[in-house]
Length: 224
Image (cartoon, rainbow, N blue to C red):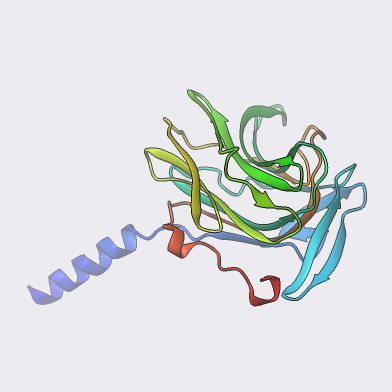
């Protein structure tokens, strides 16, 4: 009986394994996280105290990755370490898009990490939309200085969509989220080549579960 129970526990543990996170380090331009990528404009690899990062000029630089890293996820955490440097008010710097497999065209279902620049500060806009849901999370009163590295995150736990800067919640809303399909991603602007980003990206991680803030990406010592 004890042996049977042991095998039963091991079997159930195996069945409940959570899919692994997808990590993207922005240390090259032809491949991100082992997935093919290509550039438009002239994004550059720069040196930081924690290793390479990619920087965008806010005018025409964009990096396209042939994957939607949260496709199929019913719950999620999307995170990034980035440094905004100013520029226009609205900048959409990470775009994860679902694509129709029959036409190859974007369906409109997507995630966006955005910022709004106000003088020498910025605030976060985390956005997702799909069939039956459309939600932007913004907190214009929660401003952060430009020219510094930050950890940002958005997460959905099955009920509530939340956004964070450096582990501190910025906004939340209940949404009837549905998993998104396969697709592609853009870094440095939206896939339709608008709202370019001026600044740098160091790392991103996409997890198909809602992580608590204490499990978010840590800030590397060389970026503090």
